[in-house]
Image 1 (cartoon, rainbow, N blue to C red):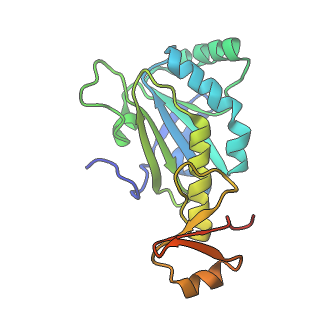
Image 2: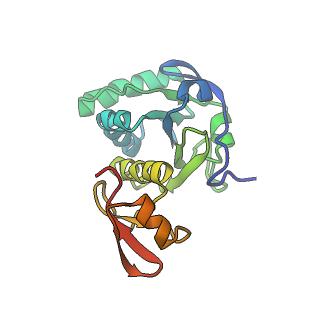
Length: 211
């Protein structure tokens, strides 16, 4: 059965550039972004790891841990990290898992059925504090991931978890949010004392909580 949103993220134990990782213990009650690479020394992925490393303080602010995985060995990972620092000036300060047997890749369904050789799909998973999968994305080899977009999604997910709201298209942190349909107007006035604007009976906008 393929992994789906809301499923419990598979636990695993694997070696990484930061030592042995027992995923649930390492993650604790934090959020986590797990993202995969088809192999080391791939050009698009080199820029992605650099981008993720540069934004790590922003993920830290959101209580979100970063962890990457690739089918190559630790020795290859360490040499790749040197290249990444050389071309970007940024040091990758989060674990990269070695997955030569594609154990982690198989657990998370990262292996595309049409893939050749040992390559895994370029997937990204956001896992919540309860270890449930909150987001799954699969990128084509030619398109680099947007880590600022992943930060935006984490902001939205955390708002939903804390305040029971939804976010509209192209929403950015600080903008108005949506009151879910299942919340009555009477309940909305209690939960959102700053009020709301009903554009339609099913579309009610309110100020972002705590803003």
